[in-house]
Image (cartoon, rainbow, N blue to C red; front, side):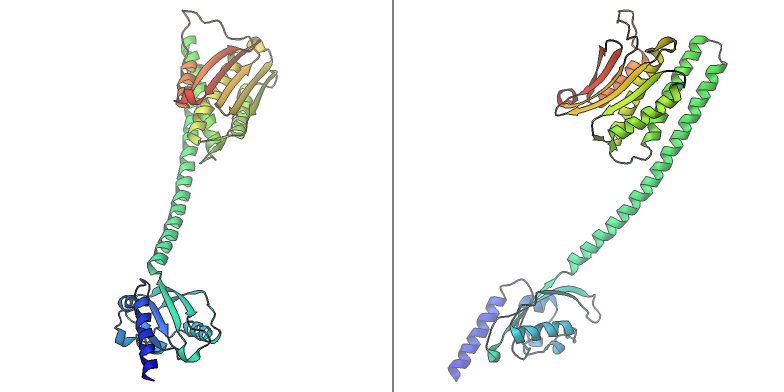
Length: 349
């Protein structure tokens, strides 16, 4: 009999030694669901002395906070059929202390031996993890609210900018009608056209806060330009052909200003005396980059000479193309002219 007792004591000592190697809080129960062994980590985390755990039942642990119906059911089921019940998450309420979020795992270590049954309770304290998750959710919700507020403010700002540009354009046009100098009038009309081009780009970007689909964007932009510049009795056609692609709203502004400048220039100068024709805006994408071109079948561009001055429109297009990592190529379309902005990795670098 003493031999059996010594063996049982040795087994318990071995169990304690093995359990104390775990950093997780562990409780080992016997067949009466009383604590046989509690690890140092359990005693440390839940502020108990081993004398306050050994031989205690659930309702005697601490101040009774461990006497949870679901935990008792898990232990009884493991004792009855020996099956692992999986993880169970619960909240441990302790008087005078903040609650702790725990994940409990119960398993039977000794099968088919009711007198020496051993049930292991593994406790994983996830209080900080759940607190961090809740903080992340709160931050995400706050971020979403801030983004919505930013979007509303941005849309309001864009609306006001568009209105301001319309007012500036109207003032320039009124001034152009009152001045007597033909040169001044042409300069004012030119300034009016450029302000209107910026307003047109601004208008079509108001609904786009992220990436912009190139095809629909250029189509709407050119529809606006055609309705404002092509009279009903003038046989001019403006078409857009674009590969499927998306660009940032920042790049879309530059792209839209280039298209507006080139289209206005073609409609004003390529078809004199009311003749008809076709202007095609094309955006092509391939493995090497993208190409934007505006082609007309009008009278073509005059041959450059030493006396030819670089116009404001040309300077604007070249500056915008450089911002997009591209360069301008001017060629004949036979008939007409073709102006291309070519973007390649070499050009971007």
